View 1 (cartoon, rainbow, N blue to C red):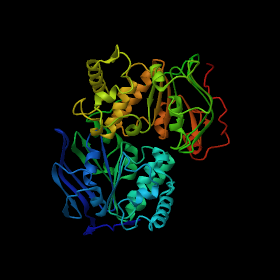
View 2: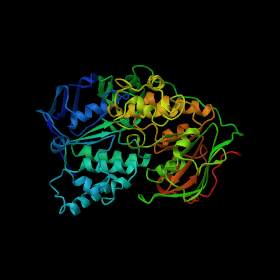
View 3: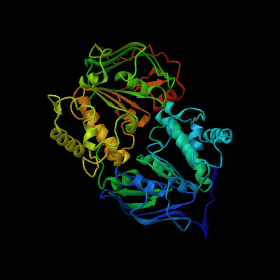
View 4: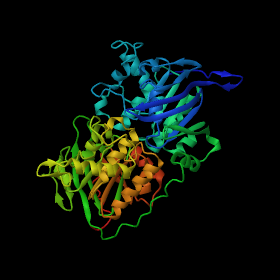
Length: 526
């Protein structure tokens, strides 16, 4: 990794990147409205705001993915206009996106070679693989340069993106929600890497909804709201509460309250000696036994890539069992198709919304009805009732605060956070009996994450059984009634809430002597 030295004048670091009066319209929707931003060499600059505030759009312009409708970009004092991400990268601007820019059938090293003529396609593979290993070891991120991207989990793909962005002459590194799928320990490794990068003189832009992280790792912070810059200053001059008020334009919502799970609550979802294997990724599930009761949130902590996605796919009939059973209120689901399981009241919030939950070319309304188009109230006598669809979609969009030009807009035009809100609006509307949620707050701002917590607790209070899989341990522990760790396809029980966060984090990374997944995680007599 080669990084730029700080450019300074009179002892004060000069802006390496200046965004002046940037505006951007999408089909008449004003996503950015005259935003100014100065980024200085050798500093970490935080960028925060609500979903749809314009953060990702602003960074996409800086990284050459989008042209501005109006405004100017200056790099080291010179006016530039990037026509492509390759031009921005050649100028020293690297970006890790919320939605990954990787070609799935190719290996990690083949992805890194694309667009990098300095390596050469064939002769440069060995040198590129060595660079990946050295850099990933320095960052503390496990990246195998020869793995195929399609076999990697979301967390592993993000690590590849981070390594790719840091290869070459990086002057400005943009990280868009980089810790969203990292464990606390992995985040610590990333923060250490950011400090090393910053100390070489490279500017780092850290886009995040996690205000404590922003306070900890950033030198300066800028708040966007409604496409405009509303505050910018030194981190030491503000607090998380101040930032939260600036983000939402007032006081953020208070934490939601909850009651204990009734001791006689019946089991709704049960896994019995579950075995499964994914031949493509090589991941396995080993004799999982777990019961989730009505009105209970069971949290599964774990580093991405330990079988979370396979578990969700097995529950919904998208991957086969090789042993054991999945039961809904004592009914074996083995002969039920995915659509039949959905009709029985199972609801799924997958980890990767763009690949597993939404069709980007479909409208907001079409995506809202995507998993329910064959059932009442949207279908009668084999015909789709489009009036009922649009009415329900419009109501859900308002309820969940999805910022879209209209419900006819393609989902691909929504920001990452608003795409996630659309998935939540669809999956949490109605009366689901079981909710399987995998990293549901990924990309959500403070207010939206609080609203999600409120909705999950509302469904919990109405008797839903919720299986919450999360790589963010703090968010998991804030909601879960019981916690287990999924480690290498095995369930490790914990004594939460009578154990420490650090102990659970250690199990996530290293497993433990309790790695006997045949232990029944019942919680109650049910």
